[in-house]
Length: 252
Image 1 (cartoon, rainbow, N blue to C red):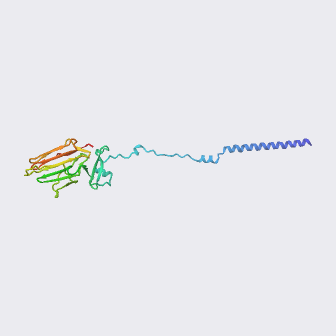
Image 2: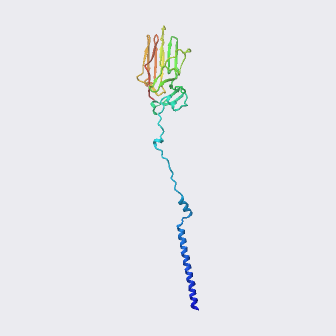
Image 3: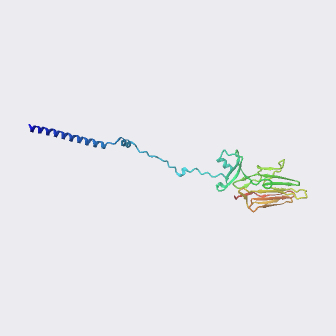
């Protein structure tokens, strides 16, 4: 009887041990399986494809705007600024940014023309005159037409000239002195003046003056810096003016 009970107890003990071993093995499999599965966060991260940010590279040649020369005339300034009206503008002699000049642009709505604005004007500067016995008629200039390529003054342009002759018949060209003594016993002297003070120009050393006419006498006195010249003339009708073109030199 006792032996039977011992065998029965041993059987139950073996069964329990076997069951515990089975449970332990199953648990180890579950833990191993859990360690091999990615977490939700890891799985989500695994599904994200890295994004490459493309920054376009502009070559220096493409980034540099087309070179534009500084305007050297009113016509060129109008080309670059279609809405420009008559007025003073900074232009650049020979298209050089190092050589600025202040020029009055006239007729900008049709045929742009270049004029040099004179700084010194009035009774003693930048005038021409014709003198008769008892009468002197003056022509005063505030601007001069200038060829900005050659730097030559158009002496005959009287767009910005005024005269004290009521009839307007005695308007003289720039830098012209005329004296008509006629039958007068007293000297009759016509005078004129060139004054480039305040502008970036001087008279070219090649500029010479001449006095002509019946019994003419006259003179031209040029300042040492060649920015000013005083002209005089007399005679039956004598005149003093530039011989040839009135050539300027850029000398700021």
